Image (cartoon, rainbow, N blue to C red):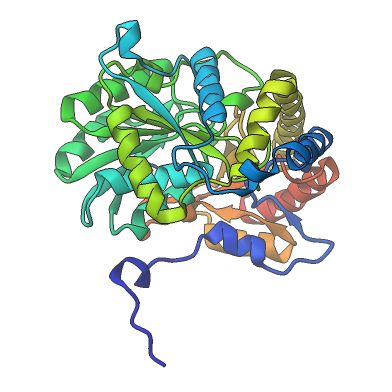
Length: 403
């Protein structure tokens, strides 16, 4: 049978990271390719206790259909926490120009896809940092939307290039940005640039999709206000999840957006999955309100600080000085860049031969024709012993390529 696939799907490639994770590995292989939270971060005992109580006492609502917007107690708890921690959430009752609404989605990934779906037609453009999150890129491409990248600098997106890119792309409808502990670069956008990004978006009438899955994972440095907290006129859709602070497998995320926007996202979600898993929504709510969520997050921060510092020390010791890498203040990733002239493809192949799995930088480009001298490392998933041994192997390869 010769299948004729839709235009939206025919040229869509699978996520390189998902494919890497499916690849067969042996006991000697060390992977820095995942973006997974550490298994040490899962509060198994607390979740087991709450789950047992839900099934014993509230099994019917946990197993029944529910509303698309999300489990109302969880929605309220999330809205309150985002207001308290990140200053997010506008209300006409408090004198703001519009009302924000919080909805629960099936992981942050669905929030990204829904934001694009409600604003972009086929042939429209989403402007992104480059590099950026491959899951976001694949969501946009699956909807027949063009992705155009703007260079990511050490302190955030190149704002001069951003404005020119908006001017050059009259069908640009959405700016997708990860300002805090960016995936894959691990960098953080400065306060000054966040203000400028918001002003540019307002000037040109383009919506901002602020993705903040790592915002609770700051383990050093000062907090920087979210772009959404600056949003006085309803230009920002804010997306985050419980994936990095509770459980990635639960697939419970949330969106904070102007009421009119959130309403459209709910309608779009109804046709996708009816509602997010209600049992896990109840589990998240109970953990938020019965357990020490702040204490739990602090334990994750301490864990990731130690693992990040260990990897940074190993990189500084093992890599030639001409190889550069970011020094994140939180999140899960370090971005490593080889000098110009080094064959990055051959380098990565040698790393695979040394039984170390990395993610090539080109995977994260908005423009699929562009190459990259960089690759992404994850420090949350591997053990301390794997970090030391794996970076030693990468260093041995690097010393053969970089003199």
